Length: 280
Ligand SMILES: CC(C)(COP(=O)(O)OP(=O)(O)OC[C@H]1O[C@@H](n2cnc3c(N)ncnc32)[C@H](O)[C@@H]1OP(=O)(O)O)[C@@H](O)C(=O)NCCC(=O)NCCS
Image (cartoon, rainbow, N blue to C red; front, side):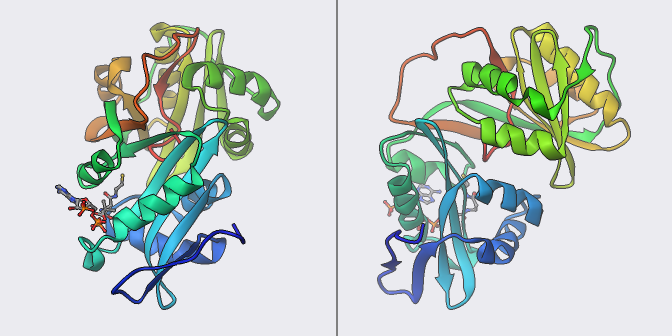
């Protein structure tokens, strides 16, 4: 990012700079301001996998955005403008910088209701809802065998994940598997890691719904009595199931894509839960 362009926002004492680890504490304050649960470690993982920009008001971080490229697809995420500075064009400027970083890629994001009007103006189209579920896990009883995987399984996990998502995410999977837990079934896998207020279960990638349920049940059992979050594509149809495990519906986001494209290729694997709203 050292050769990234620097912009000065017209009419404001703001400059846009490449996002570095030095900006993480300021970025954390912004995400706390909007009520997002990220810890410094969660921001650090996202930044390690991404390029991005910050808007600086002096030394203070007043806006953030990241562009996470996974092969030919870029995920735009962590787009936040300080509450006192909204409505002045800063969000649009940050998105323009992120889209420049994503040049040549298909772009995807998960929009909050606040962000969606801006993204629609920038040519993003909705593709479905993402349902955030969370709560104290009541445990689960997998109906199929689930075993603990190993960090060395990354190549195989990344192959299944690529088939489900179109994202080349071996680096992300290796990082999460290195600190979290890998759950394996005969026809799928799930990752469990510390995130936000507790843990997050995702991605959950499987050939069929029965395997996905078993992986989720195994994650819920492991987390019984503790705070667990899971982000489900609405079309995967597991919202009622996770609610029964103690994970209540806590909000929704809109998955968006640019440019619009046809139906997914329909491979052997499906994503039943996201790694996170930022990382897809
Ligand atoms: C979303 C967010 C980043 C937008 O930042 P901002 O600096 O206020 O955005 P801008 O001033 O650049 O406005 C962008 C455009 O969206 C439009 N817009 C914003 N809110 C709108 C709304 N509720 N309805 C219609 N249009 C809206 C603006 O009119 C503007 O259009 P224009 O550029 O054609 O004039 C900011 O509201 C925010 O940080 N929200 C909290 C965190 C969040 O939800 N982030 C999105 C994560 S996906």
